[in-house]
Amino acid sequence: MNSLIEKIGDLLSAGISVALIGPTNSGKTQLVTNELIPLLREKGKNVCYWTDSNHPVEIKDADIVIIDEAETLADQVHLEQVHSEEKPYYPKSYLARVKRWHELYRNIPQPSLYIITRNAEDVSHLVQTLATTDWDRPVTAIQWKLNH
Image (tube, rainbow, N blue to C red; front, side):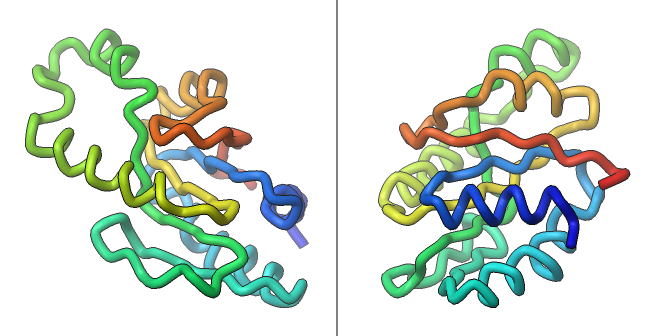
């Protein structure tokens, strides 16, 4: 069993939410669906998995909620500074959508795993600075690397 999966599973089982942050197409979703969810279910946890924030599913019977393609704006200022050639970094329509997603996240009482994607060069900044989400949830931020 992957030690990263065990760590995330232990945190979630202890009621601690986690942000798993890594680059696009690096295997985060595969890791979660093929290893983490089966591990949590073996431990007797009822897991609710959202493929993305546009398709939430019922969570009332879940012990743990996993949200793939979650989004935070906690690093927006950093991203706008580092990628100043991209103006605006986030279009207004996307920001409005993200604010709606945050309202959904805010109403989830269960410990949750938020799978967040960033450009490879932006991952470590978010991991180092994210302790509480935009929706006021304390999280343990964990960096996903390709070699996990």
